[in-house]
Image 1 (cartoon, rainbow, N blue to C red):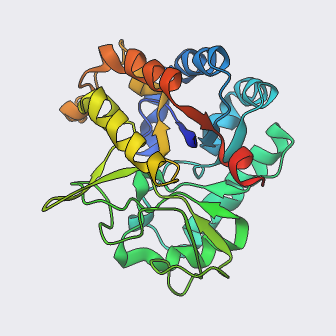
Image 2: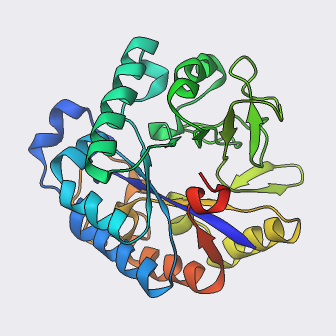
Length: 272
């Protein structure tokens, strides 16, 4: 059973306001190189949900990602929280990112992931814009976390119409690919998809969750950021503890998953 691997291609400071990014020294190229080396070692293709601003600054990195057989998808341009912007700003972010990503990659951009997984019940109308430009989305996290999530959303890939994003519709235009969760009685859906959860949860629990999904013929949508493997990530005063928790074991845990499970990009899995 092949699972889906995605990388949110952004720098360690991209959770800060865009206007402050120039105050920090980028680390995205060397940290992404770590991921690319591991993907090459285990012969894995992945989808890179890429910020347009990163592609604009480091076009050679995008060209290398494409040359290695990976897919480029959109993560917006400047990592804006969709819950805090209007539709006009969202559409400008998407269009700007697509123009840059397609020009640099030379490929059609088919997918989108909202920064911060910032689709909530209060801004589901964002899909009015998203479905105009993409064939698939991976922005709805079907779990309750302090930062995001819609715990009642479907846990497995499904199509929907923009009028009812939380309801399955086989004839819907957009394919939604929710990050992987493990359903726990009396608790609900536990995120096991990656990122902070890769560093925080026991590796055995993550593997158990992926195996459980695979046994019912469901692929696990896994994700990671380059910063999750950066043991020397600079300290940012406004960042909380979870940004830095267990960075020393991030690479080892990620490599163990690549060694023990099969992964592929969204494009290769769904033949976009």
